[in-house]
Length: 352
View (cartoon, helix red, strand yellow):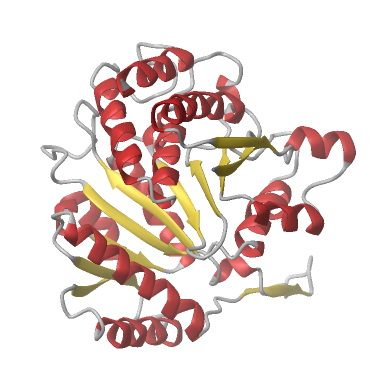
């Protein structure tokens, strides 16, 4: 039995989660997984109605679940940062989801803006540290509103945070190598400027790497990374990086794999509760139109199945996704050739 929390969220979030759940229920019938779904109302609508966001008690209650499937959080009626910090970051930090996992995979029949690149050229994973760095909010402002105003935001990392992220990346790279991938782990950083922080990252790579002699390692500055991800994405297998850099390069990577409409992600605590989500946001312009692409959320369900150890089921789902993607005209909302619900129905039929 798997207890799955559903945070449908705002905008088009409920629409894409609905299609992912439809697919999961089909897999449940086929493989007898015994999913138990519980909807959690942590949304902008609730916040606007009650003033509540996410309490400590509600966060504690999320620990009873095996995984969380999230649609999207955000609403133009709410000041930017309120929901993102009050729900998303609170869940990530509170449940210690210290790994953000973003597969970058170009499927057949998906257009990439990179000339002459094929699916075999764009197939790597970014492991982003998800608990430290600038996103912890350490810092402050002094003399605000004057010409001498000073704003400080600190990039803070401990050895513990970096070592466990690097270790996860090495282990993940080894798992991929067993499936036929190169077994190469690249550290993305800025060691020539952020000397203190990336001294920890480089030493952690060297220390942990001694336990993984079968894994090849290298290093790329983050600015060079943005070049190589366009010029030669085939050079990458697994990339590990800190929080802010990971946030930036994974959005760039998503464009190369066909856009946010097909890009899933995972916030992982390897020994706790993990959360899976599409990357594209709430897309308020498409809310209620049945035109949003649900494939990224279905892909998030695929990541969730793999995380739960259901590799056979996850492979069945990915194969079904590939079949449906071949029929789609585009990954962009409103241009897919099918409605949101039709795509979900097609994946259900392709599961077999």
